[in-house]
Image 1 (cartoon, rainbow, N blue to C red):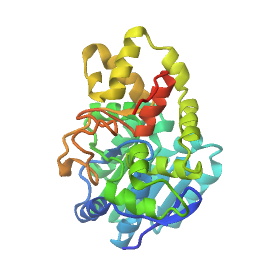
Image 2 (tube, one colour):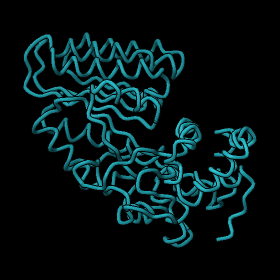
Image 3 (cartoon, one colour):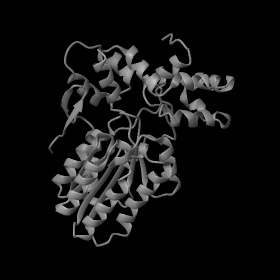
Amino acid sequence: MKRVELDFADLKVEFCDREKAVRQVEELAERGTWFPLVVFGPEGCGKTAWLRQAVEILKERGFNVIYFNPMREELLAEVGIKSLEDMALEMLRRAASIHALASFVGSVIYIAREAVRLGKKRLAVIVDDAFQYLGDREAAFTVKGLLELIEHPPESYEKIVAIAATGEGFSRREIGRHLWAKITPMWNMSKRGFEELYEKLPGPKPGLEDVWAMTGGNPRVLAQLYEAGWRGGPVLAQLIDSKRLDAFASSLSDDERKYLLDAIEDPDTLLARERMPLLDKLVELNLIVDTIPERRQELWIDEPPPQKDLGLGIGKRIAWQSPLHREAVRRAAGVRNES
């Protein structure tokens, strides 16, 4: 299997670890997807790296592939039909912004339908990181379009693999309401895989255990710490500013502030009726992942997180996206970490 080369901070690194996730793509290639697979998980947990590796696996197994990632301004249409490939290039050329490019997601599904109509029998359609630029209803109807491709194709086909990835909690809820997809979580890297990536970083660095405690295995947080010379302060400040956490903390009522402080220690405390509005705010800010399923392997892409690890901010049903996200909220709330 060819391993893709990925940008990581100022480095180029090969896709590493995620062995179970690679096997899952191989299984999808064997049977296709009966429903679109919608993969959700923490920001920066490695969904895009996995999907880019999935593109290579599927191509090696004879699939024509359409890969769409507006955030990275990527639209790959390798379908062997020049008119459709030209259409994809024209969409990229016309898009004046990432948001404008994301609005072309309907055209991506049109290209997929045309590829099937023109005789492509093995097709993979991967929509990566587009939902954050769409409204919840538009995200849901994108998934419905993928389902329509699978269930009501313009011509017969052998296999279709349809995958969409999102870190957006609210779009995931809207998609789940309609039963149009198989919604499957992916977590940060396992410690074994994270160590493999950590070892690729050159120069002096803190010990693995210290870096693990700061990142919880999140590769994007690892990249941010590496770029900042392993100084956590600037990375925290950037997260607080980008998510406007000072304003968020100032907006809380006295009760909400108490609920937040409880959640910093144990996120599962948010699972109470009176605390649900605060949970929704934290999900909307992409600070917390809620409704985490059982840790049965078949319910997850790659390895599930621990059943509970409060040191990393992981509860049984709710978890902070990374220890850094939790620490940013703690600081915005004006609470000193005594640990």
